[in-house]
Image (cartoon, rainbow, N blue to C red; front, side, top):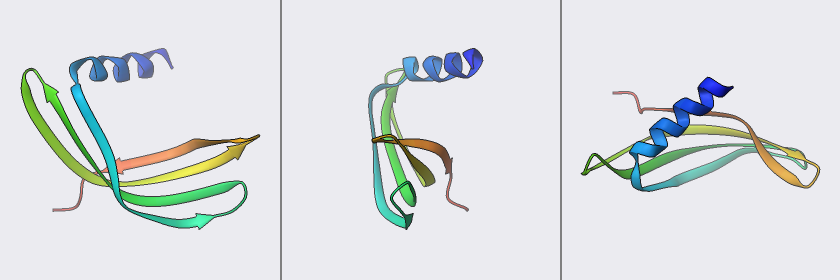
Length: 81
């Protein structure tokens, strides 16, 4: 867990003015305790003084624990070429 946390934090330190958003969200399954959606994600950030942007597709599965929704799985990937 410490190695995973360190890897994420190192990446986030390099990103400045980061903006991340979702488009075309499709809720494919929803109940009182679980939900799943697919979407297109987009991002834009400054890295070493240059602006970069990208996009891809994602799937997120959520579970309701007590009164809070928590992400239990997420998959992000590029669009096929």
